[in-house]
Image 1 (spheres, rainbow, N blue to C red):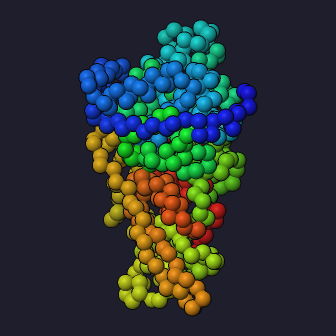
Image 2 (cartoon, helix red, strand yellow):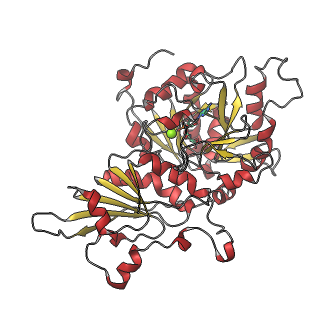
Image 3 (cartoon, rainbow, N blue to C red):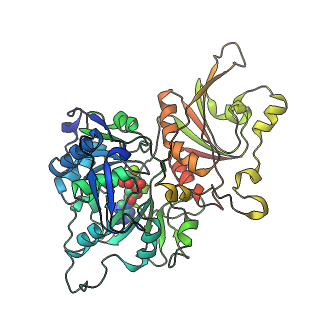
Length: 463
Ligand code: TXA
Ligand code: MG
């Protein structure tokens, strides 16, 4: 692949943000309403709808231009391009400044689109006409989790219909069918498979709103479709069912517990660094710096108090706090807070484990609940930062500014607010971010959150 000419793309584009309300695009017509998007479907665009017109503009741009289009999915915003056209896919790497050996996920809108891409190009010696080109181990997984936040690896067909830049010369191709209706409609209207990484500048936290994309990519792309905040908030789970036993390459919106319930996936293993075992990560993207705000991120496991914080604060005058299970905003206050303060500092593992009475699992504790509820209109709200100040201990020090974001306690809400929180604290100019870690040993839903936090953090502190 020719080296990307980075200097050419700086601020060349006028970036437009177009609103698309997915409920106003038009009417979806399904062949089989029991599995709406797995069987064939069509869309009847609403006449005179601005939302539909914006979507059509984006679809045309994807067909004709080499500049990628940013669009929302249920996980994070993606930066899409026609996966069959090299010049278009190179536009993604160019806009993101992404290393070209990190392969992309191809997004499809129906199984027939995927089958056609996989089989048209396969020689008949490999695939007989009746054989499904989608590897059998994925069938029950697709039935259960597609459309949704799950990416599967398939053997790359030969000759391949995909631009070589999509796979970065691997022999597998990563594919997902998103559940966002806006994303599905866009792929359908463009009538192309869309290669799409997350729409952040490389190494920054993934974008979960159109404003995040604009902040990172203004001047680098022409079009951002704004469909509101993403419902899941962390990227898809990436699985490899071609290896035996199957493995999870990246934890995400579908948890290991949910995968293990599927026939053929009972024995699925973890093949990413989860802080418990050593070993080279197998998803190529994992070796790069990820999800990094400008501030130093310190991931803290356990009780946090002013004494602990002071060890790491140095000369910082502004600090961010991301609280999850039990920290209160007063954890940095030097003076005892009376009974209230004592309660705020403690971490209670019974509360944090997500287990209910008698070991019954808390039903709201998997990101998967979101997967099943995606068709319901959800009002997605994202927590924002609250300001407080701590008085100096001596006269020559200034006050310490504290920006606290309470991410909530259940993994679904934490995942949804996480990237946005890291970005907001950066905008407040904090120098250090203390994050309250989660216990992800027993609950797969917390794994995706801890994975992102471990990548963002320069230090994990166990107290
Ligand atoms: O939720 C998502 O997956 C989002 C939205 C936009 O769909 N996309 C996303 O793409 O997160 P990206 O490029 O940021 O992450 C793709 C991940 C990387 O870790 C990459 O290394 C891995 O998938 N990947 C892609 N193709 C692969 C392959 N053939 N083998 C192994 N890993 C692969
Ligand atoms: Mg990414």
